Length: 342
Image (cartoon, one colour):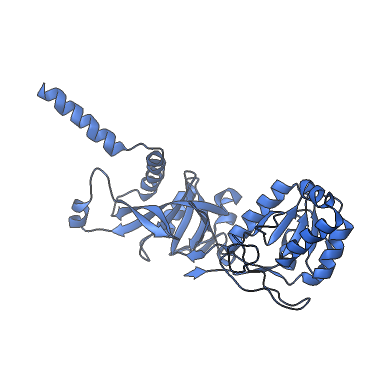
């Protein structure tokens, strides 16, 4: 199941982040209902003052053509505008250094693209001409105490997470030996019991039953727990337990990047014999258009699954670093065979 949020109102962004970003609303309050949307959603802005204005019209090669990609956050750019315009000391000096006619032309061009909002960084005094223009065009104008780089990075991170596709996968998501590991398998095979044993061995729970994953960068999938399930683990026979209450805060991890999937699977003797004894059962699973390594671990009486998962996590880290035990084993055997032939 995939979920997706297609916009956030400027006033919502302000209410959520005003303390963390040191923001103050200084002008353009009538534009609080303007929308900040992901780049791929494209509509022509319209609406009267105070209406729900959609600012998803995007601009790339031509500033006058709606429907092209426009980034969410960035510094003043009159040719390739951003939905959230960040103005620091350099940008304000540029505007204030223009002649009156040139400044009016620059402002006209800036506001013609219907920015969602404008943020002045570093607590700089907001010029009167900018306040007046924002009130006239109903564009929210904020002042932030953060410097431009921190402000832009924070907004990029928040909006990237907010607008990322979110997929829910069945299983238990944990941090095992510092990597994010999703434990999957058919219902009743013992995923929760195994997770509980791993917790007692010092590893941490992210989410049980329905972890949510979002792609926040080209090579990063972030895993989190739905708020309703936070801290809880269902163990057959014990029912629902609160891991935080039982084992303390250190047993819970709020989020983790997905690096490995381990699938528990009951196997017959015939299937066990078919497994590659050198390489094991390594393959990949496609998650949000990214290939994630997957290992199938046979479930059978007498197997210590907790130790196997800890070993799988450590071995995965070695493989990522470029080491392969099976390759070294094969090379060593080849050397011994060549020495024997001599």
